[in-house]
Length: 135
Image 1 (tube, rainbow, N blue to C red):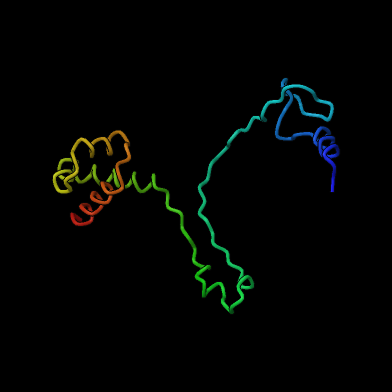
Image 2: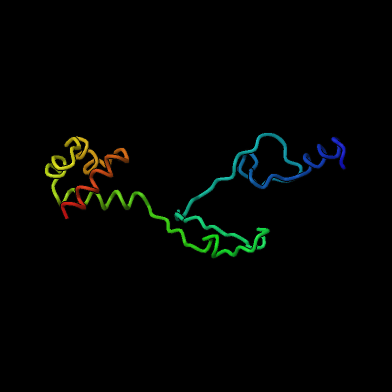
């Protein structure tokens, strides 16, 4: 157990490594005044999937990870790649033709293909179904 005074004193003596002094110098215990967030420079971004990990010892029954389907790999699929492939397929098949066959307005289809607008999920499903059936 700590007293409030001890907590306040400890807080006052700690250095916040996430921030810099207002002039950009490294923080120290004796710093005073305004601080600024540290600059962050992103070099690259990578999308990753999620994993499901189940420890069989966590369950009181005799289940294993395989029985719980916890060993299945979940593959991440980038939605932008899917939409780019769909745009390419519509462009190759012809915007007018796909619009007529799918019942999607030609202007919506042109905005999707030419301007990169993302349509509603149901519209994407219609386009994909027509492209599959048209072969």
